[in-house]
Image 1 (cartoon, helix red, strand yellow):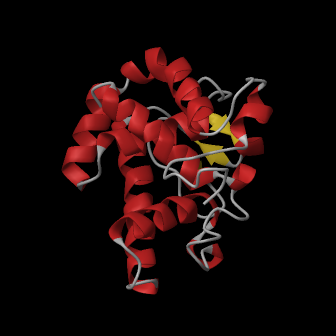
Image 2 (spheres, one colour):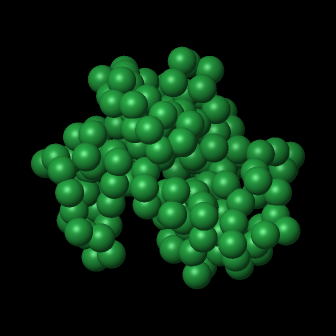
Length: 179
C-alpha cells in the first residue's frame, strides 16, 4: 500500500495536493468532511440506490466526494474537461449519459458501472480477498479494469496515484457520519 503505514484507505498524495499540512487518511477525511454539507443533500437518494443495488451508501458517497466534491467541482454538471458527467463523473467517452447530473438515474448508472467493475475484478483475480477485489473495482472505476494488474500496484496510474485508497478513506468517514 501507499504511504508509511500501508493502512487500508491510506492516501498520501492528498496532503500536498490540497495544501493541507498533513496527508494520508487524515487528508481524505478532511476532504470528505468539507463535502459533508453538500453530500447530505443527496443522502436519501444515495441510500436508496445503494440499498437497491447492494452497495454500501458510504462507498457511493466516497466516490461522489472524490469525483465531484459532491457537485462543487462541476460546471453545469460537467467535469474532467467536459468528459465526466454528474456527481459520479460518468465518462461520456465510454457510456451513454443518462439523467440529470444529480439525479437518482445518474447515481444508478454510476453505481451500476462500479458494480460491474467490481464483478470484473472478482473474476479476473479470484484469489484476492473481498477487500482487495473491492479496491481493485474502485480503481477500475477510475481507470478501467485492464489497468488493474496487481494488488500491490492497484492505484498506480489512477488519478493522483491513490484513487481507491482515497475513496475507501472517504467512505469510512461517511460510514461514521450515518451514510
